[in-house]
Image: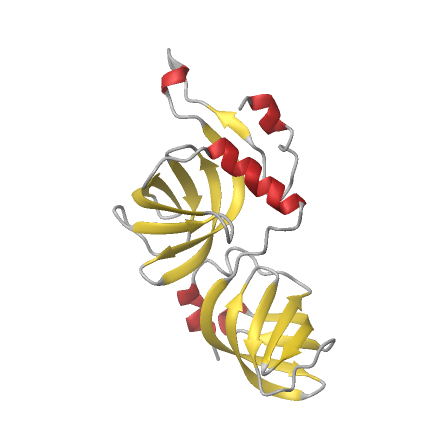
Length: 216
């Protein structure tokens, strides 16, 4: 697949610029082709999850901006979407970014095009972190403790006592992460889906370990 066909998708603000970055050298054909993407991924290591930003990707590896506690040699699971999962090993880490050698090579160009196509047709569900932490919910029902079961940049799924009804505006207090307001999109059998009015940042959700410490 040529670069021109990839650049058709280069203006998408969420998935980022899909451009080829090649290192200088006499024979560029022998060097791995890297593509800058700036896409959010869910990364898992040693039972802990967090969101990271994919800075670039090639057929054999990725560079991530990551907050999880990792070290060279750590095995990572990297979910680019709920349908595309990669595995690899950390080869370097400078405290903020890390390089990952994939366990098996991929067609990075085709992967990026598939991710874009899924987002266009609405099949790209928001990635969620799986967690179990308490938060305080405040609304017209008063103040309640709720249990967060999973969390995305723009939403929550919580377990509650029946107080959270569809359409209600609710404020959630999540310890050190702070307060977020949202609207109950659905409520059924003690569970509720919340759409946040102000999304979380990657800094907020860089680690489920941080979420556990953020509980009330």
